[in-house]
Image (tube, rainbow over the protein chains, first blue to last red):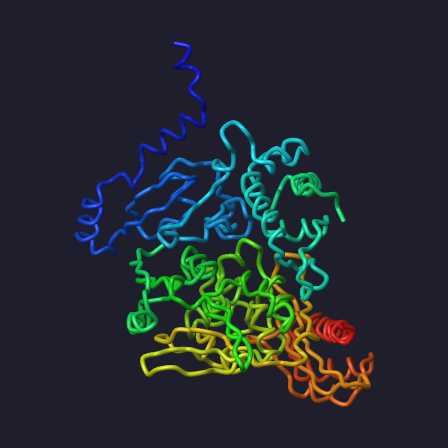
Length: 213
Length: 328
């Protein structure tokens, strides 16, 4: 009896979502329905998400965000504005951060997608996740998965020598220092309505392993 | 959102052939088009994804640099030759959008993005000549603080939102396109249109033409160039006013050539030959900057909410030129 009561809210919601998965329809049935209604045909696609390959038949309108949340039950990635203005849906596609809400799932055919669920190694948190905990870098937590994915990419971009609007001289090719100014500018695509920004900056700085310049 | 067919273009000629159907739109990064489709502003019946075409290269050429149409904004901004030779373009790109959006957005798509005029973007407003030709312009009587002060018409006072296009205008970029009749080259200043009586047409690109590349001519003084963007918040916002500037100084520090383009003020990047001419032969300094700024905003017709942009443009031009002159 106890095990029945211990079903987590997240697991319960996840199972409800999975019950409505459109992509589990047989592809033939989807195509037949499309043909009968004159609707454009669904598209077959294959994406690798957090290391797991998914072969899917999708309505082309399905965004990468809706694929993750509604079809695959990966609800770590959040839907904030759904218009590319808040960054809550940030995921890594081919190692680069993108807004999953402004991206068609079928346009990512063959790509490697990493969401916040894919950052841990077993029970070990990613250093950016650990830094967010240590620095208390969130309040309600809704923007946090996007912030963390964004910060993971930010640190890679800095190492690769990418410039930002905070970079004083873009013609200098040496990597920018991980200053607070650079972190704020490079994290500006992720809004936090609770205003946890100072601790988010601290977490990114800590994860970057350097003191502010 | 209206249902649409999705196909992936495998070659340029196939993409162009598909676009003979007026219901087709090309899909690049999708950062603007998909948003407009969600809003109900755009409703194509068929998206042809052009992002897998072999058009993403950034290549050095004898005549300058060729930016592939599907090169992502972030890749262009970070390219060493862009950073060193066309600094203004790298700065303009990183002044736009967010890192996530720049990773998605393509160079061709950046030119094709549509205005962020709130009355255009929201179909619950019945009046918008750009969205529904002949329906009127809600912005004329509405809140038009962000709108155009130069080159507007009674039909439309929207501004073009691109930062990169302003830098490209200062750099004399050339847009290469392919259509059913073959290739043609469109100078960037002729690529976007003023609204006139046909604000529904943002550009002179025909519906069945595909942008394949943007060519940057060699510019020996491109290293002495700069982009200044003034906005309501310091990041991730559209420009109130922006300035792309480049200066060629001789051995005595006298200005030999100047390039000046404004963003956030018109339906297209606003390049002013007269302002550039006023700088030639001058020594860098407030007098020269002010004369250029006056010429640049000559003919400005601000409206109730955006009169501040005229003075903001003057001061932004002066600051951008001073910063540019001080570069080494």
